[in-house]
Figure 1: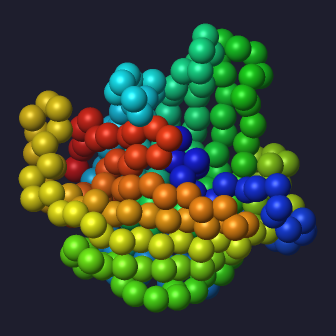
Figure 2: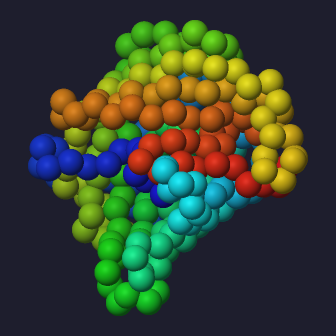
Length: 240
């Protein structure tokens, strides 16, 4: 699910062959230029987060996602996301191993997709990594309304197999974040309070194509807990 928000390759990406990380994503394996990207983000403060994926118009639940933190360090989280969703009669399963800042800026990612009941429909894998990053302007953390941050970074990636150690494309991406709202007490549908949550408007530009979406960031958990793109993802529960 989250791979749709981060680092997606496009047809205009530059064809290359450069070294790419192998094995699972890990905090200790980040490139020096990218590992500085924590940018003052808080350390993740939870073990597991359950999310519901909703259709944008009627709110119908089309999937569920569980994120499990495996390691943390200085604003970085190493995590696994297990997601299920439906597309017509086909069930779609996805497992993503990743390292990211605050759950919204992905620095390393290995995503695998398959269908348990529709043969190989939609199946595949992709490995992506941020190789360099530059802060163009601003600062996001500590969060407060009006804060803005603009980044430019380079992504290496491949779709050639789980353990392939060579990237076959490179693309540049520019991303900006703006804190637009503070929710003092965010309540889940169960009534459980998630406490203070900030709404962050995000604009991503890749190969001249612009996409805007919103994120929900919890100061209690130190992590992105929801987002709205062509789907709406909302928090269901968590374990600290």
